[in-house]
Length: 99
Image 1 (cartoon, rainbow, N blue to C red):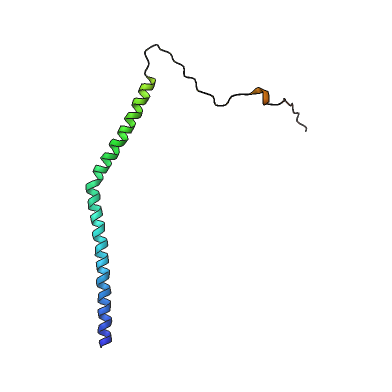
Image 2: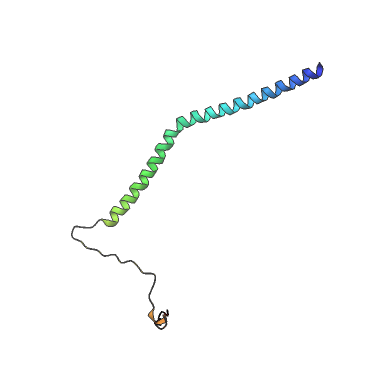
């Protein structure tokens, strides 16, 4: 009889501990969900304003770069990093196909 009481008491402790863990998990879930509902709009607005500032700065840079008076012509030459050196190419060999 005493063994049965100890066994039941042990099972009750396990059940209570399991319920405590489950309650903590559920409270944490609902707390995070609630906080996300409060702070998500602010975070999204901040992200959007940051992206908007970045877009505007790139747009202004592009506008400044291409702002020219009407009728003005400008030619921008790209620097070729590859300089052709014909002296070191070797001699030309004409190949014939053999069938």
